[in-house]
Image: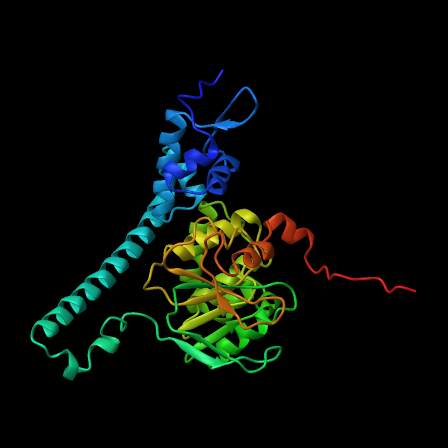
Length: 341
């Protein structure tokens, strides 16, 4: 029998670890953590489970996917080299960004000390030049032409909304009005992976490298995955908007893809990802380089949503998300209400 003085329930364990109870359940679903059960059948976490959960949470903070964490915990080193290299590159990019920001802060302090701030004109933009430039445009139909603005563009921005909310139109207008942007639509699936690579041989090396990394991380090779990688690796666009990034990908592949994209760090090309998959947009693990744009069902203007329970729009975002299994089962289904005679 579990002694309650030595074991914590899920809520208390999550609080002490600084994660959500959903994250603990996710660790369990992937076989990474096995809590004991109380006499009443409740999950309980003892010292051993807490130590393992803390290790998992620390690896998640580094950006590792759950599949990678499983290999680390099993001390399986095969295939971790490329993943670690990506993590190192992302951390080094963050370090360069912080170093640059620190230098600018020091410069502003020096200006303040010399009382030159009022005449230099520096403060307005001194701390923001390392960020991607913002965007602003008038919203298309079904909105009424309201102004939409994002002052800061994160490396990963998710666009989400219920059916008929206008999220695809928002994404297309964003790609049309943002300098150097491109829209990667579902027509990417009309051409097979080998055909696309044959048409653009320069893509073969980077796509093969990313594909090998993803498969090692549990992804399933497919034309849909190759088509997505071709679009992601194509040169040219400075901002890329991807329509339903999960389309044609199973759950393990979705998890591997989003883990790879998170590894790019703040220096990565900004990506806007349309999605309704909880494997792509996991509200429990969103990082500082990610943002959510929510399109409400009532066609109110799209809004930035903070990923915390109780924040405006949070429940609407959570309601739109579904597991990959549910998304696959309902693909193409349109709600229908019979007419009353």
